[in-house]
Image (cartoon, rainbow, N blue to C red; front, top):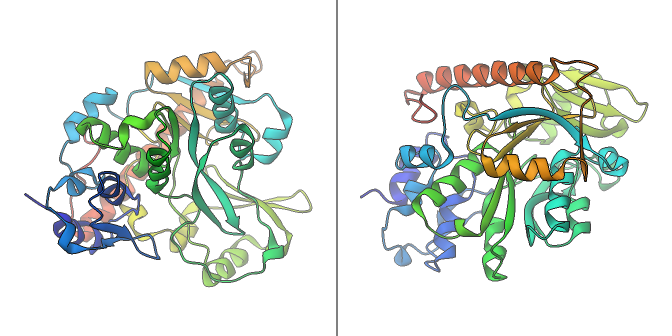
Length: 371
């Protein structure tokens, strides 16, 4: 049986660790206490003597193909980009939510609806802690959900180099407070690797996955590192100064919103130097194991593309329509949803091809998301 030692050798050392936190979350949830995340968010031994070598931390990792088929059956996964029941283009009805959130604020609006209707007791999201970082956060009130929306730049904090532990996204370690508080109806918002780790836990029926009622996935081009060198190079590419930046967003390119109202766009391929290394080997763009997947790709500014993947996802989306969400007017463009789906499919294929090439160069096969 393979253990955390093998996980380090096979995943962490080659640069494939996404720092999703799944292995540490499981180990901590059952009070083994053998693993921890270091200052950079990488899993490591906290106390090797406490490790019973159960091998579950190894199996939980989204880079490992154990329980792959069981996980696919759990969500009825199918090629080429996971199960898709419906494609929608929506936005939050509340203008204040749209103003603060990225894209159309659909995730925030849906979370608010789930909370207001008593379907969840909280949501694992991320919140901004400084100009270029977010951290995992368990939102337990309506206001906390609203406050977590968006990714804005506040240059009053000054420019300094931060750890890349929490950047544009965060890990699933915030599931620990969920267990501590005894919550059993929580929505989890995460990127592709995080959703995959949660689904593997659910397929294996191990803690703390039973606390997750809904998995809301985010389209993901990669986790970007905003160190001083990266910021300097990015500003040169985009022709802007960081003191005039108010908001950033990722669609089919990286968008930088300025105080003047102008939006500077940078091709994502030009920003490969900013990506966390492991992201170059990830083939999942659209969070293929989620109940619902969200992204700005394929939608006009101020709207969100939503891929409905499970009956559960379809039910909660339908219930929020007209309450906190509104659909794009299909009379204006009857093919809008179809075009959004095609855009998602194109970028999904692009990411899979890039990941396969990177893995070939690394000498590691792509063990995930095979048809």
